Length: 52
View 1 (cartoon, helix red, strand yellow):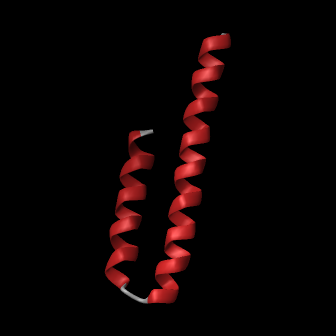
View 2 (view 1 turned 180 degrees about the vertical axis):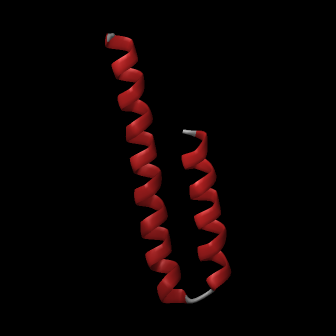
């Protein structure tokens, strides 16, 4: 999970340095979906460990 968080931060820095408004909008949508994916992944792992 640490690697995923580092990748998200790295992608955030790349997209913020681009500076284009249109690219920025797509970047935020991409970043938000990635954060949701990581959050759901963490919740799933916690529930799996809890039930096991």
